[in-house]
Amino acid sequence: MLGLDSVPWHCGLVSFAALPDSAAWHHREAHSGFEVVFFRRLDDGHCHVEGWTAAVEDETAWVVDYEIEIDDAWATRWARVTGRSAWGSRSTRLDADGIGTWRINGEAAPHLDGCLDVDLESSAFTNALPVHRMQLGIGERSAAPAAYIRVVNLAVERLDQTYTRVGDEGTRLRFTYAAPAFKFACQMVYDASGLVLEYPGIAVRAG
Image (tube, rainbow, N blue to C red; front, side):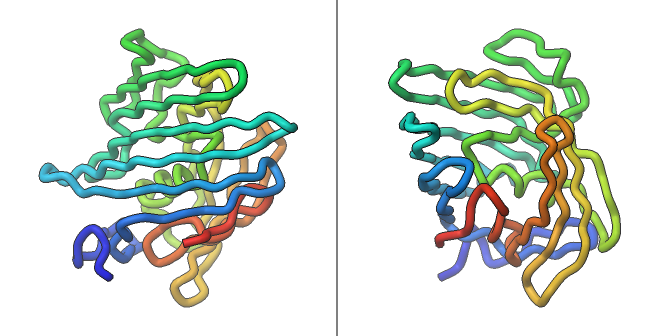
């Protein structure tokens, strides 16, 4: 089955295969659940992403659904996120100009200045955004600060993080990821489409 289109999406020194129509992940360790995402290429070259994650963490069940639009440079242009749990339902909207300026529910968000990606605590998919956008060659490292959206209260924080492309094994791409604020680092594996296959401590690809 062909993905969004039959033409590879190029990312500098990486030529990614076309995105599939959908992808899914088992979430485990940090929380237990499942995520499903659907992709749709728009006429202007942007990509519309729609996803859902349902999980249990610390005996609390929650579900997050989201929509993200990314431009042809893989910068986030807007995101809508809704979270539901025993504490109720919340929703938030982020808008970005693609060069580092953000608004949250219509209000300026200067703490996110310079961020180009959205990163959802509930999602394994969103770690694909900086990998496509940054165009890293093997051995290259780059900072990728993101607008980080928490699960339960949908608080939007600035998360400083880095990615280093450490090498490839056939169609499997390997990146070292680090988020100092969480004292967390791991080596992540991506497929030929630039989607996460293995995210240690968080999720593995299911489909």
